[in-house]
Image (tube, rainbow, N blue to C red):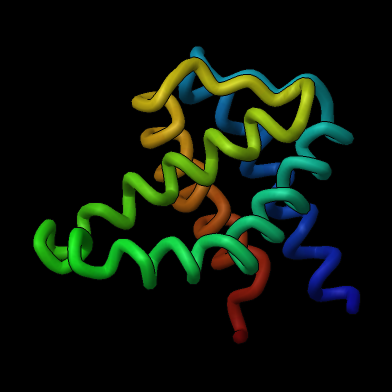
Length: 115
């Protein structure tokens, strides 16, 4: 349970770092970042597998690059669902989703080295 909470906080910290990298992404507060991290976790758990399955032919044709589009759309969905989290547009969502993944991965790798 403590590990899940730690990962949740790491993801929130990654979200808080995004406005420093991308000026078109805004996170109002740490509480908002926690809520967005929770919403993104739920979206990626419940909705992403279905979208990946439904778009499998397009994903195969694009050699997997369509997954980036799915991630951007889900990142944008979190923008619509949570007030205080604003993403400027599709390209901001695309690069924001990539940045969020990289920052989250780096923080996770630094804090959980022995896994």
